[in-house]
Length: 518
Image 1 (cartoon, one colour):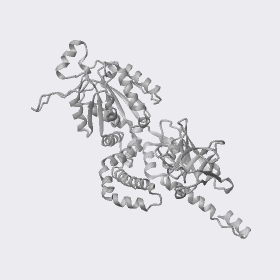
Image 2 (spheres, rainbow, N blue to C red; image 1 turned 180 degrees about the vertical axis):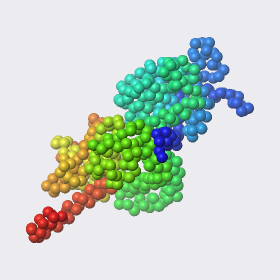
Image 3 (cartoon, rainbow, N blue to C red; image 1 turned 120 degrees about the vertical axis):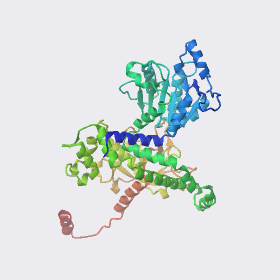
Image 4 (cartoon, helix red, strand yellow; image 1 turned 135 degrees about the vertical axis):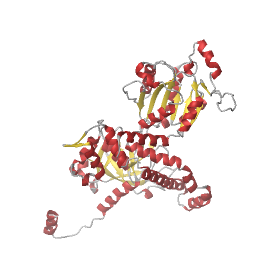
């Protein structure tokens, strides 16, 4: 039986297995003398040269010993969790190492006892495009007692840089996009009574941060994603073994035999992706992060005693049974209530849940390199009239182009007019659209391929808002996304079915009576 505690424990274990690296930035870090009879020499981080022997000196000069950091205890405690931890000085040369970390620990007063450097370092860490959506926990670990002031300064900086931080009760945690900033004080800092639990020793900090990271990724879907990603991290050697240098000669032979040798790289990417998929599938099947026990724990963790699905009210156990048995075999909620299920499970009032998940399941992620190509499954919006279209030209016929080529598009319109529907992301909103198969609505437009890859390639908009294609008449087509290959192929099959209909002369009476009687 799953429980709320079991659910949280499972999430913590999943997150802990995922965590691999941590970096601590503190210019007053020191390594304590060896306690096992080994060498007594200290390893001191660059900066203000903090050391055990100088702590008393700081006490007499007015700089509190609370600002020092026992790096050895911190590193050892992270190691016990299976996390590799490095301690670096606040320097630009350390930024690349800092960016690689799952957890980043920053002192609040870096370089001349000023918080400006820490805020600038935080901005530099997060604001670059490749880092804006990183799953990262940042901890401010400070000897300063004014956590409320630190909270306000960090919150305003994140807000100013466009990270849309979310305010929470208390002054110790700031969620933003896919990351979070948490505040902790070093030991013996004189905090307000309500914040006493935020003062932790170095040896305790890694465990606290592992819990914070788990709370960032708490949920069934994050559990699946983290389990899959952990398997990929741990199975890198298996993939490299499959694609070893021993096969380079065969790869070159394959490349030379292709009509367009440049396609060989991307072909191999598809096979690497299949290996990754195999690792992820095996890990999820073995760990079952969203299995029956996890689902029951999720429902118990929700805290509600009743769940409302349309006009049906279910208690917690009935809700567990609904998920376990499925809608088809459940006798408390009817099939027609499927539209109310997501809202019934949701306690936060999140909008567009079903649309967002449908979009994730139908569209594949396309990054800026290489830029999007125009082919089967590309969804675009014509600039002059805002008409939404889906490209139906087969992928194999959309590459190796040497001259201007005509592409066929099907319009996307009100969903009530079509049985085949997709969810398209329009900026921050999700729109349900139907694919129109009527030949009268088909759109034919001509495009010129790129001389580089011999395909019609999108270019980034000057405003930086996305990608767009341009036809031979100069019309712009904003790129909205690309359907996953198998889903696009299913649409193509439906489209082909409309083309293969055979017109025959038959008895009109027989045709009508067959349609009316079923």
